[in-house]
Image 1: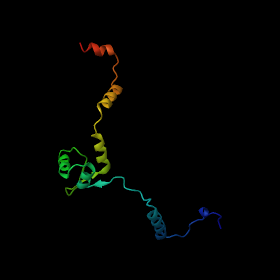
Image 2: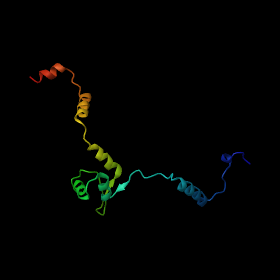
Image 3: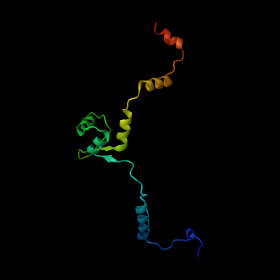
Image 4: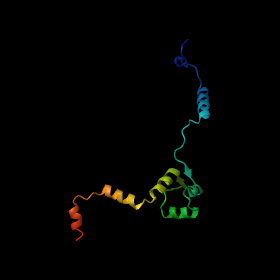
Length: 118
């Protein structure tokens, strides 16, 4: 007989017993992988964004918001896509915009810049 249970070989186990083992193990710990993409209906999207359902329909019609059109004509929205879309529409203070412009667009010759103003 092995000294450690880890060294014990499983020789005779049924598929049902194995499934029972895993079902019990994961059911108790909620370790089953969670679905990363949460699909929202139009009311859920409205609650998430704060817009009315009618306004969301208008944005869908103009294709200004990410959406999924179902075969039956229904709409679904992926929570992550909506959150990303909302983040892209945020405004920045003018000082931050100016700083970003300065960092990304260096002027090589200052004299050339001022001479072009004349």
